Image: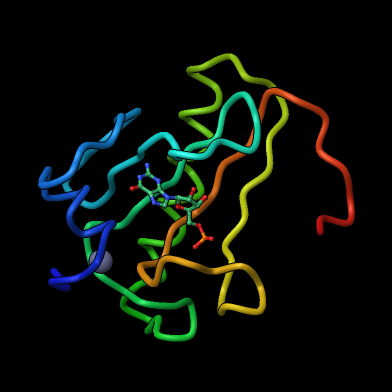
Length: 113
Ligand code: 5GP
Ligand code: ZN
């Protein structure tokens, strides 16, 4: 756990987060500032700052994040959806603990902003 990381604190239960799913590797929380009717964040319990810090050891973890995202949307009956990793400030990353955005419940335009 990184001491000043807000997502590590949510995972540890030190600050509240509305959970949609959790297991021994992942916690899924509803985004505090939702951009769609369903907007959850898939968080690995392991603190990894950016996608560029991943190693081959994390390959299965990233795959599971995508599969759990699909499962959460399906269980919510939210229909078509988008998953997004922002990597770096220029791409909109504001919390430096990797997280997969999952957006559903409205039409999603392409290209994104
Ligand atoms: P990023 O901009 O890094 O891709 O996404 C960070 C996301 O985390 C944003 O969508 C923001 O609304 C969300 N967020 C920031 N702080 C909190 C928090 O304390 N709780 C929850 N549930 N989401 C948060
Ligand atoms: Zn963290």
